[in-house]
Amino acid sequence: MTDRLPLDGVRVVELASWVMAPAAAGILASYGADVVKIEPAGGGDPSRGGTVVVDGQPIEAGFELANNRKRSVHLDLGTEAGREVIQRLLEHADVFVTNVRTGALTRAGLLPADLLEAYPRLVVAHATGYGTRGPHVERPAFDELAYWSRGGIAAAITPESQPPVGLAGAMGDLPSAVAMVAGVTMALLQRERDGHGGIVDVSLYQCGLWTNGWVLQQALVGAEVRQRRDRTASFSPLYNSYRCRDGKWVQFAMLQPDRYWRPLCMALERPDLGEDERFRDATSLREHAGEAIVELDRLIGAIDSDDLERRLDGQDLPWSPIFNTAEIAADEQARVNGYIVPKAHRSGVPIETVSPPFHLRGATLQFGPAPEAGQDTEVVLAEAGYSWDEISSLRERGAY
Image (cartoon, rainbow, N blue to C red; front, side, top):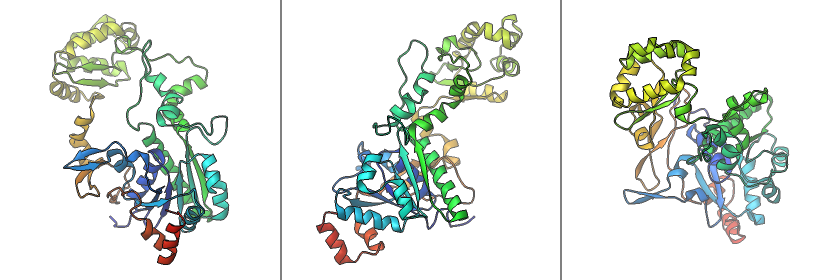
């Protein structure tokens, strides 16, 4: 056990909004990095919207998740003074994280290749919607679009003859942020070996293709990919969802019928179904999947979820309850593993947050408030070597 986190001493400058790139920088902050978030002068990251009131205080729930422990600086990069300041900050940075599109980066003098030439040890992590080449480089993107829709996930999980299924929240942004963290840490390791920084490119589209890769790979090798079926027409009764008597749903993932069908019948106290000619082996079970689903719907529909849990676990079967967010928030399994942790909002109100999706044993992650927009501007400028007279001059010149 050590009090020193892996990224202690690593300085990150973030010029980003919404979720993917800010969440990547937020994970770096949880592991000890000092992250300075640049927000537009007089405003802030648009993800600060959507507040909820907790103990009388407005809490920007999503912003708290993606902006853990950061410091916020106001800068107007449309001014010469603002552009001077960000270059000064990058002189002292190890990592620059951005999701600003290439055209705007060009106008601000922040193209990744130019930055790497100016600061050879800098790691530049650029999040994009559709990549850095091709006709749609400058097309606006959110995860609903590049990751979910164009990435094929919506089509892959939508049953036949049904309208496309949409995502909820930042389901594409947050896993893409983890990919970005992986690229940044790999580039930092490379720098330790050869002394040179590098450019990390991560797009929502690329991450969507990776997430959908198991299905996509079938098409890439020439196999026919069928659209997902309604649960009542599933190819396997053992890879399906079922509703219990108390209204709660469960998901089965018993991918080896010959191994799991008879133990499941034992758990449901119907061993005779395990010997039924219609379901005697994997081939028969597939041919009569609809009939098996009808049988399981009836049996499971007569059992409360707590009782079903005991029975399924007693046979060591692969299954899970289908939780809603309220059930996850109350789940002891999430808390005992540190997946949901306490932290403080900047108002002092105690809240909880989701921790990063990996944990280095022996390291105690740091969780703290997301910043008020621009709250650290003058302190960060002073740390960058500006005198108070120069800071005053920067304000007069419209830098912030």
